[in-house]
Length: 228
Ligand SMILES: [Zn+2]
Image 1 (cartoon, helix red, strand yellow):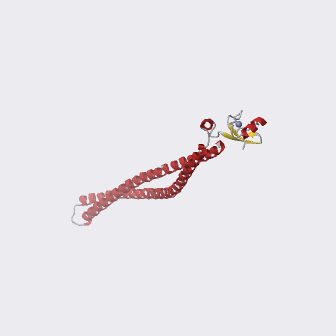
Image 2: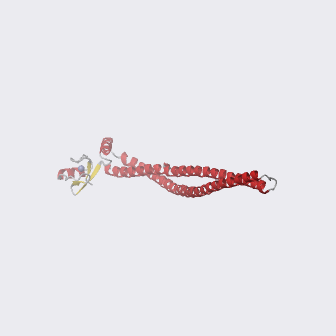
Image 3: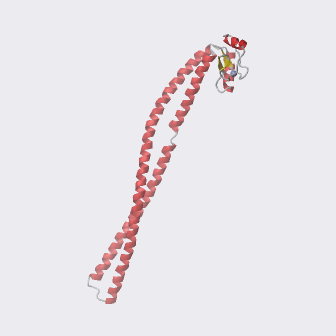
């Protein structure tokens, strides 16, 4: 009866271990949170770059307007003074030089923005994939969790039935040994040896262990011997 109880207990141990694993797997969303964080950070980087690019574009437009106005004055014919015209010509040249600087900046900004946008797209894809995987995985884990919980319930019932026929004193002893011997309290005798520790047993012990009303302990490992 104790041997039967042990078989149930070992199955229960395994089922409970798996249940703990499943709960951890279901609750662990570190991958998802990491992907979300990376995506958000990249989104901010991209937004900042967009703002920067818009501001440069605005500067380029303003510069073009200034050039247009200066050229209109230069070629409009209203200014006759040669010195004034020369100054205006220099001004247009200077405005165009700075326009070149602004346009270079604009191009640079566009290239960087393009790179960062493609990184953002990649992170978005990663995030979508992780979310998708998680939904699928969790539905699998939840299905298995329900099964395991049902299995545990079934084993608990079986255990109740199994323990009802065992003397309280023996049951207590079984529990104590099980706690101190890594979950294995009962060791089956195989070829006159204790199967848990491998010690060869005397003929007397083997015979005693077959008697259903006696509790025989392995002299080497301290477990209950089962001769059946
Ligand atoms: Zn032993």
